[in-house]
Image 1 (cartoon, rainbow, N blue to C red):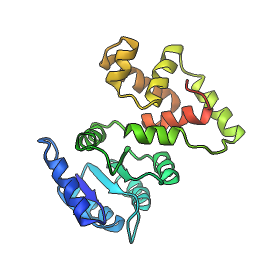
Image 2: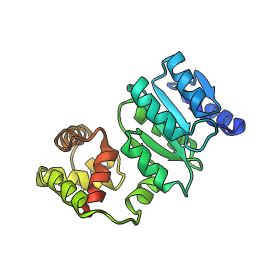
Image 3: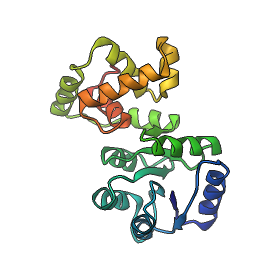
Length: 213
């Protein structure tokens, strides 16, 4: 994987945390979004952990360029409170997850592992921030979201409601007294029905509908 942050001390700390996990390897670092794109293409990494606010090219612009040039790369965004519009924009453009810069080492590792496994990850704090954003929702957008959600069964809606609260599959399974594998199957089916790339986009659809499920 690759770490992109314009603050050398923070980048070094992130690398130390990630490489403390036996299954993670940082192959390169980048000091801005332009360098991140170039190094992703050079090293063919599978996960990019990238800060939003950087010089030359910010993390959002890098994300958009990588969607065209390296669509298989999973992008996990680093952010701080106050980045709400950027968070929403990145998620709508397919970011695999978000973590706060003040997260624990365990959460950072968990986020990268989730992205590598093809899942999406939002730290609980970011989930609450995104789903709690106060902004006018256009009537047409609300109707469209509700229409798409109406395709779900009652059980699928129940699973999605918990997913939209930021719960991992294991926790959803415990709440609904089902196995984690069963929940994973439900989530895959829900994403297919809703035509969503990942669980974060599905959660945003719930938010747009103005209803938890």
